[in-house]
Amino acid sequence: MPSQAPGTGPLAPASAVRRTGVDAGRWPDVARLPSAAPARTAIARHFVGRALDRLALTGPATGARSSAAGPRLTLHDPDAFYRRIGRHGLIGFGESYMAGEWDSDDLAGVLTVLAQHIDDLIPAPLRRLRSLWVSARPAADRNTRTGARDNIQRHYDLSNNLFATFLDPTLTYSSALFPAFPVRFESLASAQHRKIDRLLDLAGIREGTRLLEIGTGWGELALRAAARGAQVTTLTLSAEQAVLARERIAAAGVADRVDVQLRDYRDIEGRYDAVISVEMIEAVGAEYWPSYFTALRRALVPGGRIALQAITMGHQQMLHTAATHTFISKYVFPGGLIPSREAIAEHSAAAGLTTATDNGYADHYAETLRLWRDRFTTNRAAVTELGFDPAFRRMWEFYLAYSEAGFRSRYLDVRQLLFTEGTPR
Image 1 (cartoon, rainbow, N blue to C red):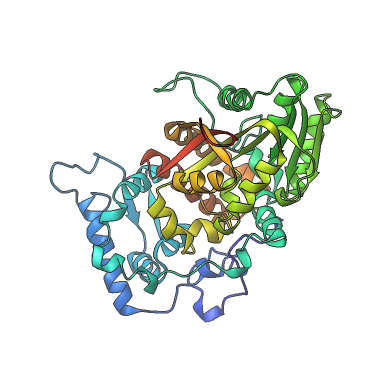
Image 2: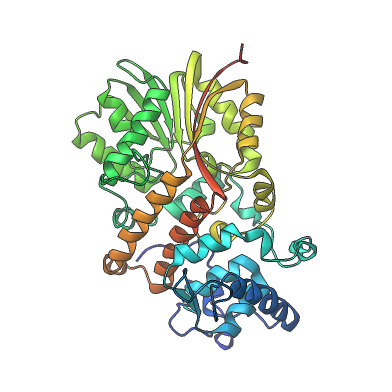
């Protein structure tokens, strides 16, 4: 069986359990409804229900919209749905989906509509009172050296086989780069290689380059860098990933050119011609971004280059998210925080780095996530055989659709950046 999922805790009292199909030991806050809070439930029912109707997501469609005009949200248990949202906001919204209290014919579509109108769902005066129904992030999720290792392992060490159910054969767990939109037929593996090759080109990877990779994944970038003749040191905190990455590297015959280390980025040794880090900054945590960029800079030889792929969000949204325990931080990426472009610019400049290139690819990530989600839902039976229960499967589907919606609505972006030393001339 997989390890206990993120966000779980002690067994819920039997009297509090409402969802008989949910394991109360592994998912206590899903198996039980929160204690009654009539006023908050009434507020959620009024404002959220009205917003769902206005957006034609539930109930009779209004205006020019027909029932077939867009995605639909079906409430199986409206009382539980509004009670959870009234008590726990967006965490409750996600937990209600995990509990099977609502469904959709197009989950990513519903979440995209909501993301596009996120600032309109609750009146501005009530938004200023958000601290009354959101909770702060747990202190235990801070990315100290011990905390970072625990946070990474809670996600990436769930099971290599789980990730294989929805990733392509390269086992690349980051945005692909497609040739054009609308997307022509192309394998996801080819699009992932295009993304990796662009990062290698940005960093100037060639024969003899000494490359440091922060965040190994399952080793595909290190493999392609080694194929160019680079000498690669790659760091990870995931023991599961390290084992499989080493196996793949050995099978490719490049073990003499790739060194996989279980090591924190704060403990980097040596200096390198180039550093690449793909969607790892999101796991660092805001308080450690200065340490992260300082470590990148210190790892460079003079004239070296840093290529980064990073998910970003708007700055104000980032500030709100940083102060809030969210569904994603509770169940998917404990300790994680997506930076804004402003935060990246500020902390990289403070470390003595100049941004030479900065390009966004939100549509590419939305398409990548759509393909992952399709594969995950197609392979539900395989996920079940691995020991993951229905609540986990619904949580993972919600996470993938929620993320896809973030990019489709442009609430999120993904950037490829090149940094060099010093100030621009």
